[in-house]
Structure formats: structure tokens, C-alpha cells
Amino acid sequence: MGGLESVKILTTEANANVKIYITPKGPTQGKTLYYNESDIDPGVGFKVKIEAPALDKDVEFNWLIMK
Image (cartoon, rainbow, N blue to C red; front, side):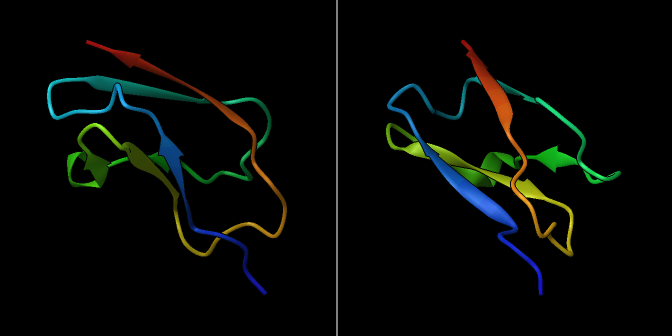
């Protein structure tokens, strides 16, 4: 059974004019963590996705927003 394929990060800093950098803190079993500009909810947050099918274990990552 697969796990989550996305997670919402809540931050008021998210908006259409930022760049978001996502860096995994460990192995992702060859999967890519990413976001799309359409995944940004201005002033609320953004969604980080992983290529399907999702992994059965957690993937920890850091994120950084640049204005």
C-alpha cells in the first residue's frame, strides 16, 4: 500500500512571486520531491509532491522560500 503523495506546508510567505527550494534529508528511493506553481495557495501555503507511487515510509525534507 502506498503512503501520501503530497503534503501541505502552511506558511504565509507563499505567493506566486517566490521560488521554493526542497531538499530531502535522506534517501527518496529515486523519487523526486517537487511543487508546481499551481500548488501555491497565496498567503496560506504550498503543496510538496512526490512522484507516484508514493513511498511506504516518511521522507523528511527541508524547504526554503526565496523572494
